[in-house]
Image 1 (spheres, rainbow, N blue to C red):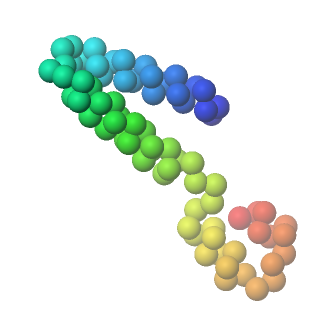
Image 2: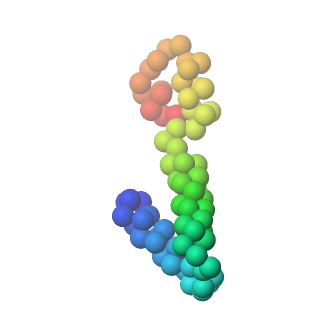
Amino acid sequence: MPCLVRLERLKKEIKRRTNLVGIFPNELAIRRLVGALMLEQNDEWVVTRRYMTLETVAAICEDTTKDPAKIAAL
């Protein structure tokens, strides 16, 4: 998914959550909410954006033949 689409989705989620809260007591409260949402999104991106699983890396490290076709098939 392109980065701009993800950013737009994040903006919509921030807008939705801030509208739910309605009135913030101060600017720090807004920063905390937006910061928490961005940390949550970052954690999600880190988990879902893995190109290789740990099992795939382990299989490659154990393979002594280093056949590129076999590695690509994993």
